[in-house]
Length: 272
Image (tube, rainbow, N blue to C red):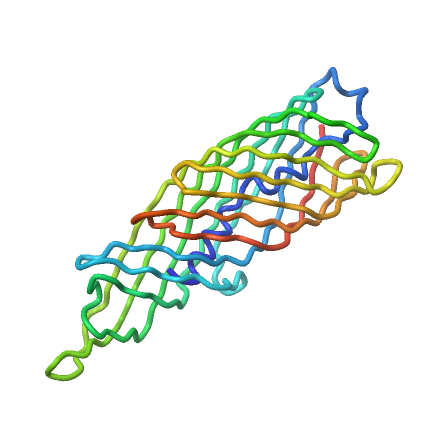
């Protein structure tokens, strides 16, 4: 549960990008009609955290660190969308990531890897997806921008593997032990509430700062997500560069103990 968790982190991702889809607060003439937006995007987060694996004689916590996308990422899919009518909106976001094997470190407990063990090599792999759906209502419109109140549900499904080759020190001297392999899956469902919108940087509303913040709980003890950046609104849609942060905090013997994703995101939004 090392840098592989990073991959998961990327997974997690989902609703954070959604804020960039917030409608132009000055478009009052479109309030009576449905507007739709579709946004493929690229998010390159750094992932860190701790995964807890259950082993025959105990358990092991694998720590994650910075993940190398170019070396370890096998597949990625990121897409978000929104439907809006006046002050009301429905939005969704989906992400799927698959990371290959990656070196890591592990701390065993309850004698899971024997006594006095010293890891020779630790590898983890991780894949998963994140889906978020929600709804919102514009509660404030001003010349400087708008604020939407939002609620929704975030799902994170991950599969992680742990492979350890270690040598154990025993009374008779050091002896080589066979590999330890563990593979686990966790499905996480969390409700959330927060705000999103944009702050206008120019009088014509073309340049703006998209922002997003939510907090939630459910399968996770606590989860939160934040986003901010800069965007430009054209007639056909928007282009924005943002920085996103998404975190999950578990408890007990859950596979995901902590998982944090943070990094830049490039978004293109098509409106119709």
